[in-house]
Image (tube, rainbow, N blue to C red):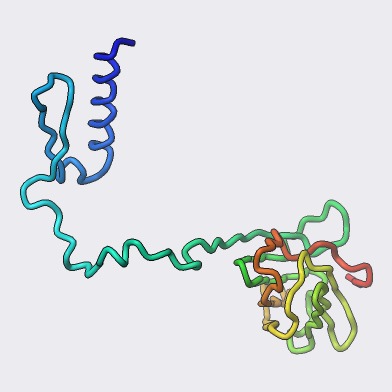
Length: 188
């Protein structure tokens, strides 16, 4: 490709980019300069007034807060130990420091939510009904059991909805799920 064709291609790309950005063509005037194949972009008369935003250069140079980079991951998992049964009974949402989980375990159908409790350790969770362990799991990571929030409410088709929220011990570790393995002591 000759230098002249390369220059022309660059101009076409630049014009295409200006046309693709909504309102960008209104803010710029593209004027040919003395040289045949070059262009200069300048602000149109009046430009863009951003004084009402109250920003300073210090604001623009300040580091972004850590929350700006915080990702939330979510997904579903099976609450069954039976191979091939994917009931999607565990719906989880993970941030850098928290796990929020909603369990809808089909084997708990008919159990009154007031009779359900949660026993949680650093890496296990156990649901009890009337004081008997009925479902348990090994967690995918370590949590702080003292920060757990638990509630059990009526769900669809008489399956209780169990909501768990707990802080993770290691903020740098992503669990990518809640249940590593369902416990063998689960009677469901």
